[in-house]
Image (cartoon, rainbow, N blue to C red; front, side):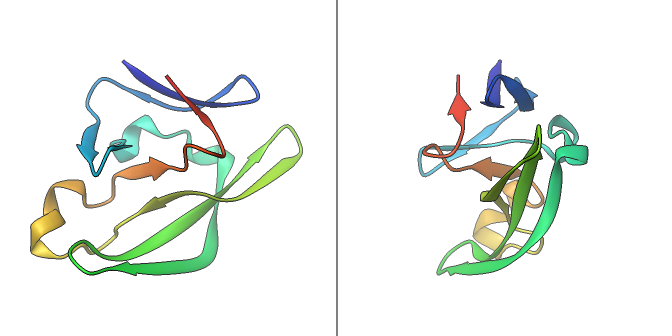
Length: 94
């Protein structure tokens, strides 16, 4: 089981993550979406496509661009469509 926490609060937890480029991508249903808001940030990966970002709101603290996902990935990354990955320097992943 892989778990993502911020200040002890669980943001995501699953035994069905997909590892891509050393990042755990969590299935959408494993993410506590009530703790997230959409970010205006987006980035482009040459082989995965355009990533969208989430901000987290935990105990009154906003963590900007804490996670990303590919809503419409390129074919090579279709296995992570909608799956959410987290920045290791902003959360604890165990």
